[in-house]
Picture 1 (cartoon, rainbow, N blue to C red):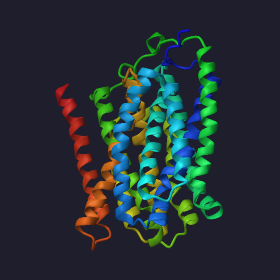
Picture 2 (tube, rainbow, N blue to C red; picture 1 turned 120 degrees about the horizontal axis):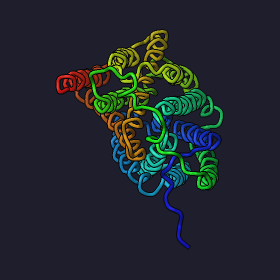
Picture 3 (cartoon, one colour; picture 1 turned 90 degrees about the vertical axis):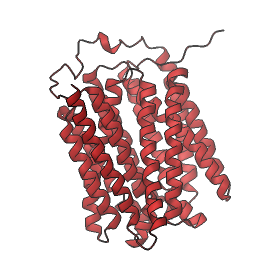
Picture 4 (cartoon, rainbow, N blue to C red; picture 1 turned 135 degrees about the horizontal axis):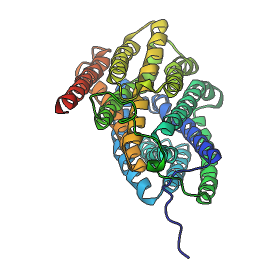
Length: 406
């Protein structure tokens, strides 16, 4: 008996499309519970300080970049559901095995295994939402997609400090594994249901125009906006992962318990989720350089404020600004990747790989700065800020080079 071909087409049923959002939410909660609180675990279990956690975050970021790019190609070749199932199974195995060992080397190896599994899930989930959708509908679907994962991550980070205090450190292994089991069962059901659907009409069959020809007036081409967003988004994650890796150190400086740290450092998560709602309702930011540039500048200012402040009120304001800025930058990268690109799985992998590059470079630069200038506690923030400034210059160069070329 011949096997069914990999499922790359879009899902036509709204109910089944909603099920993809459930998958996404489960994936976001489980990965946030494990990977974002990993640095508290390494601090408590292996006595990691800021430098060690930054090095770990840098290694994970670069490995995620390689893994996500390959995962996007895997999903495009073997099918989106196959990628999600394999990725979820790998994460479940890694998280449960982590709970059984106290070896640093084994723990790090299992973390890398779990991350490889996560790499397989996100590009495929992005493609499942986007495949076969016309540009006008894509805007709304990606808005829902962004809101779901952002809100799920925010809630998970908000409550995990409380969970760790009440249930102990093992909860960061067992709770994500349980959620992943539910996700695995749901993805099997969804795959079977999707195969019974009629094929989705290709995007070209819809009587809708590409934004480049529908009221599009920017002198910059859509492909340049894609390239600019793929530069800006890793820069945003360069800042985000640096902050997350240093959160245990920042919490100690501000005298926050893990529970309070979870509450206080989740503010930017919720701000990002609200930004996704606003950006979904108002598409006027599409292919408008000034919005991307202002968001990038706000990212730089808020990042520096968060890492050097000793006042919790400044921290709150900086987090609100950071979340809004990151929201627009991330939405830009995902929207342009899905709107301009044809192979959704591969472009989802490129989008995630760019995130990985930023996730690795930020902590790496902060670790290098702390190594070279250990007497200055803010040297890590300054080192990352220099890279962010270079990124801003590159953004303007790409924008004006394109206009001159045209």
